Length: 329
Image 1 (cartoon, rainbow, N blue to C red):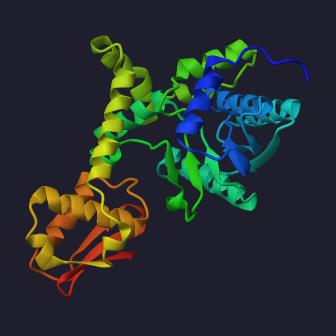
Image 2 (image 1 turned 90 degrees about the vertical axis):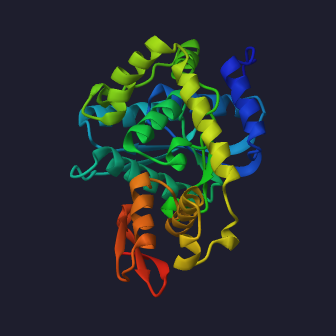
Image 3 (image 1 turned 45 degrees about the vertical axis):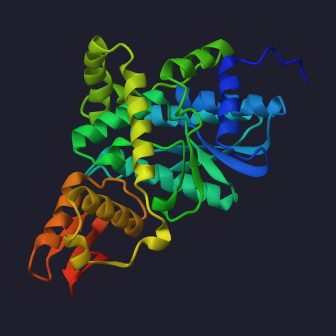
């Protein structure tokens, strides 16, 4: 094998973050989600270079999900990833889907993609799935959740490591670029390697809220604060610490909540208790907004049993027998 050149700064930063997150370096398999864009391609190539430099001895399996939303472009993305991985001897798993276009298209596509990634990782007995989310993605997620009216959970953004519990799995979802790499860094690394990457034309479609945030809102905010991307991402991290500080052990969370106890709580403590309880019962706080907490609060203050508060994902909370009961519709 030809002698490797000096370690690229992008790879050095990934090595540092991998160690900081205390992730496995041997005797394990990891699935790397690869769309063909600069972020996921840079992650795959950096993980491959780490392997070549004996920084880890993991089995790397790239995973590409063809949503079939852009016709020939989607197929070209798939062919690109096939060529990229074949050229480097990296294993590849490919999935296909016909995404439901009614309702929230972005959410439908995300659900199908993560279901595929989870199945792939489980079939391979992998410890987790890697995605190429960057500091930019964290800033955009913070703004999306702020606009949506999310509570502190939503404003804490994405975590670098979490369990894929909302997909019925104990696998880890790992975002090793999230805390340090910006979109420009991933593009530059690909450029330095002489690797062209794919570009999703849907990233120009302002019908999608995330695209409007990226193309319209963030440039306006950058006029007031040139470092707005880092500022928003840092704020999300501070919110994560706040949420962690307010957390309670799973063993302390009851199946049902006593109304007399809840009525005796101050508002901030009530909201914290409801948020933790709902997050535990649902398996995730995803899509849980302030309006949902307030709906459950109204059940607490109501004097009538049988009242129901609807929650995202087909779940609900019912006031019955002096308690709040969680269930699915």
